[in-house]
Image (cartoon, rainbow, N blue to C red):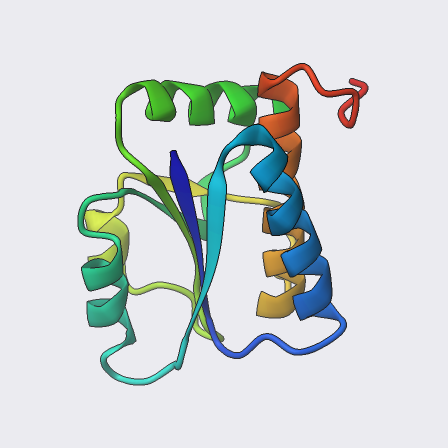
Length: 143
């Protein structure tokens, strides 16, 4: 299984280092997680769709559905069993357009708070790692 973590905007330190650390740790669960940074411009949504055309497309959106860590792990597991790789997309300053939201397979909210894209990316990377650790019975998640 592969997971793409797509972020609209440029990642900077120390956020980038934290994201890379979590994504590297996902390798211990035999899951490749790739960080893709996309420049925010008029064609960004077109590029998102090209990069995710065969993936289960999850948009992170403040109006999306919230899940507990256990629920999200189960959700990821169900999608993995379905044979499609996952793509989680964090939008730019204005979020995602209604057109892109309609093409998504799922809208996920990390929080009701609005987070800067770099912080949201760190939280999402940690969430991916936590979900995988739950699925593999790793003690990282103690809940």
